[in-house]
Length: 229
Image (cartoon, rainbow, N blue to C red; front, side, top):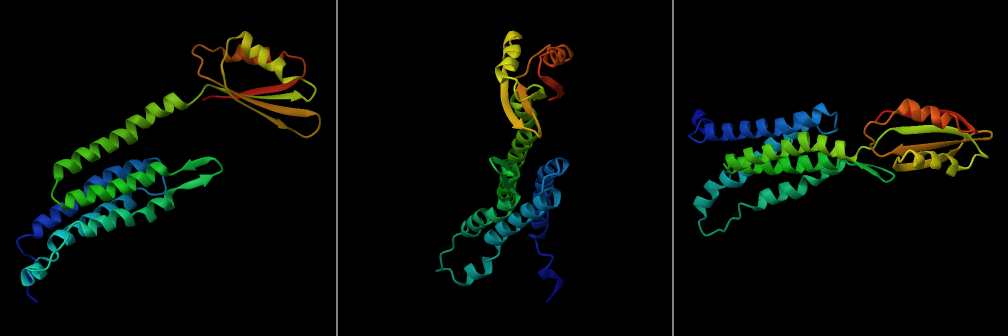
């Protein structure tokens, strides 16, 4: 086997496409790595480069065979379709279900997208791959901040009360202050106590110190604290 087998005229194109897939997949993986997700920098690179390699195999790996058997029909989309469907097992491994809370869906989607980017790069569609990567990074970085800003509520108050205190006495205080309640939970504690956890909607200009003082002034309230959003 001569060196010309390795250094043929297409080798630079193959190397460039694999490197370009590595670069784009690495950018998305780096963003996931910074946020400490289970599938980060290396996983995304492996998926992107592997998908690119499979596309190169599909496009160029069977040329000799096709030249020898020109009557055989070949579908170059078959291998890429298996890549996209087969990548699901990696995505499933990043999804964590805890009760009604589901985490990892975005990372699973990013792995699937990186596989698609790798295939597109392998096909030589660099412009499509670059624009897709840009849009993905915009959605992961900027839209994530917008989503958190919109979905996060206001401060959460943890109020310890005697069991004989009626909950509506607490709620009437929030009504008087025109404060909208986002969620409320009541838990029984040991002895004659209950804990009421109230999260408010975002309230610009809320005087938390004054509200804490008003809550603790209610007869039957034994303690109160709050978390910053």
